[in-house]
Length: 86
Image (tube, rainbow, N blue to C red; front, side, top):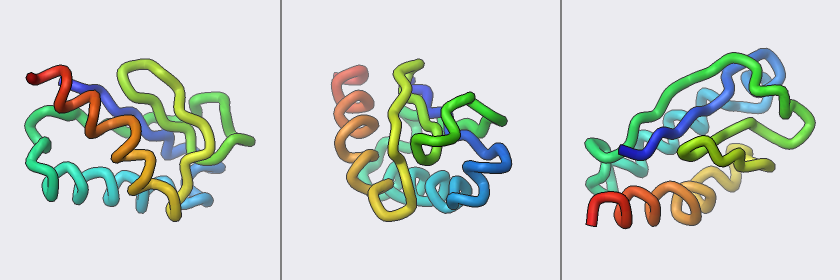
């Protein structure tokens, strides 16, 4: 199970973190991996200046925003979910 944590603290919330959560959930469904990832919300992850704070299995991903969320999903989450469950 891949653990994806997205900050929903004040700064990240203002940058659109809830839309990133929704994007990741929708893409997980589209790719048939909803049962292979656990998407969680977290309050401040202490990385406010670098986009919406997101981590995948504890690895911090900087610069996530509404526009690049689909690309970040394809780059970091999908390969991990597929390789962890191969």
